[in-house]
Image (cartoon, rainbow, N blue to C red; front, top):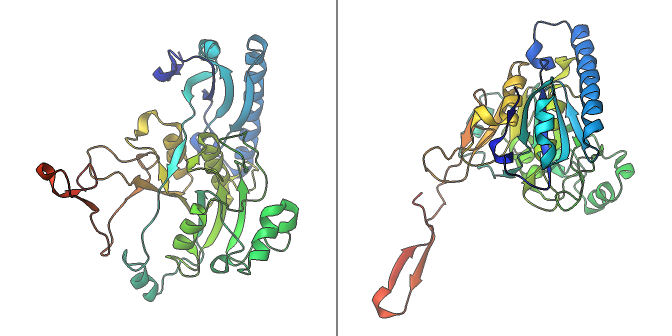
Length: 349
C-alpha cells in the first residue's frame, strides 16, 4: 500500500506531488555494468510512461511536470487533491508526497574555516568536480573563468544563444537551468543556460571553487535549482539537479558523476526519513558523491537542523559566527518604566 503524505489528507485544490514508483532507481539497483545501468534507466522511463498513461485516463486534469530515474524512480505531477487517493492505489506506486521547496543559506569566509592553511599545504581541489545546486552561477565573473565585464553578463543573461563563447569557462565547465526566470511566480522553464540573476549561487560557487575560494583548482558545475526572483528553491528542480549531478550527460551511466554536490539551502527541522530529497542524496552517495549541505541559520534550538543536511549520508555544515560578529541590540528611551538596552533577537544564539 502506498504511503501518502499526511499533509495531503485534507488538501484541496491543485498540488505538485512527487510519486515514487516501486522499481529501484539506477543508483539503488547497484551491481550493474555501465551498459546495464543505461538499459535500466530506459526500463524505468518506460515504466513511468506506462504509469502516467494509466493515471491520466482517470485524472483528466493531471499534468506531468518532470521525472527522474538515477537517484529516485519518481514522477512529478500536478494534480487535483481529490485524485491523490487514485494515485496511491496504483499498483506501481510506493509513495505520494508533497513537493517541498527550500531556502538558501549563506556561507562563511575562507580563512576563518582554515581553507587557506589547507591550500598552503598543497591541496587546492585540482581534479575534483563540484556541482553547486543553487541559483545558478555567473560564469562571466572574473573569479569564475569569465571576462568580468558587465557587457558579457548582459549578453549572457539576455539570450541563451548569446552565451556562445562565454559558457562554459575553464572554471564553470558544465551546467543546466532547471527553473528558468519566472518560478515561483510562473512555471518552471528549464533551459541550458544556468546564468545567475539572484546572486546566491555565484557567491557560493566563488567560496567553494572560485579563484579566491576554498578549492580554486576544482571544476564547477552550475546547477540552477533556485529562483531568479526569490529565495525559494524548487523541490522538483532540486531532485532533478541531484539527478543531473549523478549523471551529467543523462545516458544512464553515472561514471561521469561529480565528486561533490553543494547545497547551501534547506528547510528547518528536517527529517531524513520522510524527505524525498534526502533519499535522493543517500542514493547519490551510493554512486560515490559527497553531498555537503547547510544545517541552517536557525540558532541552536534542538533538532532545528535542515533538510537535505539531515540526510544520513550528507555532510551537514552548521552556520557559525565569525570574529567580527556582534549581537544586535536596541535601546528603549521611553517610557521610563522600561528604559534600557535589550537583545534584538528573540532566541539566544
